[in-house]
Image 1 (cartoon, helix red, strand yellow):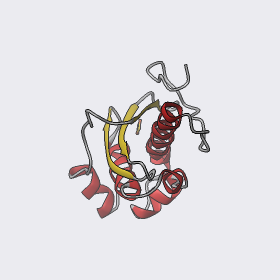
Image 2 (tube, helix red, strand yellow; image 1 turned 180 degrees about the vertical axis):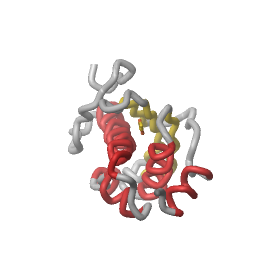
Image 3 (cartoon, protein in one colour; image 1 turned 135 degrees about the horizontal axis):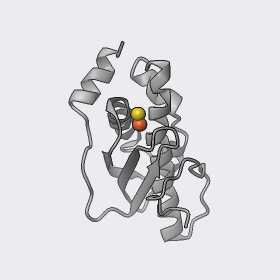
Image 4 (cartoon, helix red, strand yellow; image 1 turned 90 degrees about the vertical axis):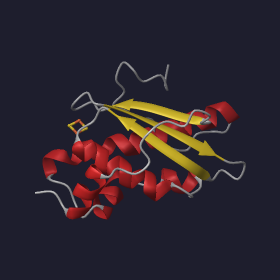
Amino acid sequence: MYSEKVMDHFQNPRNVGEIPDANAVGTVGNAKCGDIMKIYMKIDENKVITDIKFKTFGCGAAIATSSMATELVKGKTVEEALELTNKAVVEALDGLPPAKLHCSVLAEEAIHAAIEDYCQRNRIPFQGKKCEGCCSSCHNHE
Ligand code: FES
């Protein structure tokens, strides 16, 4: 039911953890299941994401999609990262069962929330999507 790539990223997730001196942090909740995701980024002066890590209270599909999403945006600019959709992440994993597609939204929204945080800290207008599934632990839109 899960592709080999999903199983690989679930069993050996990349970029798990925290970045203590991150300059962009995003936390979002999944409106559908209540699971939570936190993304930490280090963004350099050229707006390149030089490091990224995630922590999630999500399911296996959330772990696999976050692992793949962090791999895809590492080394990219903020603008490029904002173009990454959950659909592209799912495609990179060779698909997800339809019932688990909502899990992949968590990574996309957390990336957007972290970049929004970076924009706020640096007084740059935010061009991405506002996260919609905020749970009570989301502090990005207070
Ligand atoms: Fe909540 Fe997958 S069931 S993220």
